[in-house]
Image 1 (spheres, rainbow, N blue to C red):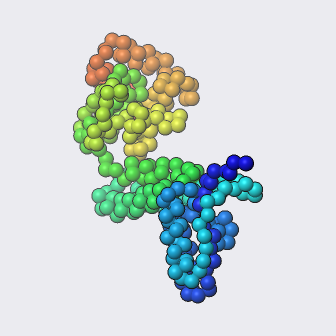
Image 2 (cartoon, rainbow, N blue to C red):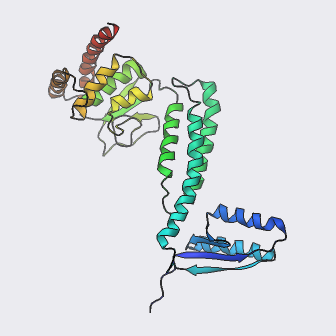
Image 3 (spheres, rainbow, N blue to C red):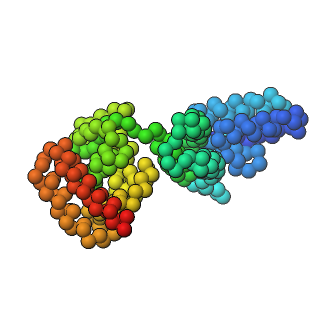
Length: 309
């Protein structure tokens, strides 16, 4: 019979009761390596040259302290399966990700709902950097893709965006051939977020992102669709724009852009025809944005007066 391929390296060891510090020292060392306990004094790592070297060093420390043990190549045939062992690794990393996620939530409670002052940012950003570093440390030992990584990274990305200073005179980049969501988002940016904004319309395949540029309604952009929200809705949320006259505009843009009837506003059909007319009559994105901005200015004024009652 052909021998099974070894998937794991296993450290089996015995540590004497004295010196007392040796047991805790070895436990810390194995924790740093992200080895998981299969049972008492039996620890496993995925097979590999680095794991072999790491466990060999741990074994030397054990022997030097008066203990004994062996490093084995192993395959699980009965009892625990390979997937069971992989799940032990995922659970261990998930527990560590959960700690960081709770710390990130606590940090999020300290971030003001509106703009963050420079003084406050100077206090919070180092804390956020430490959390990011800790996630990177856990991820380096996340051998089998623990479930907790994506949620905590998403939470940290959101905190980075919330702590970022409000843009001033930034270059905002989006795809060429703008239509309703990009027209409305460009108008919103210029009027309510960054009055000094400059716009750049690009072909995604040839575009190379510059560090100082902010992308909207683009794949991998800083501001783009999330879930069932269009870019306009996302911008309202990110920049804490609570003007009541903007909410109905967001509903109209959502229904046109996502081609659904979530809000069912009666004016949707007329506004959609106007947007289509602008796009048909003007191939130049700069002109489209200018014409659409005038329309959204008037639409905003209508909703603003209605909101006043």
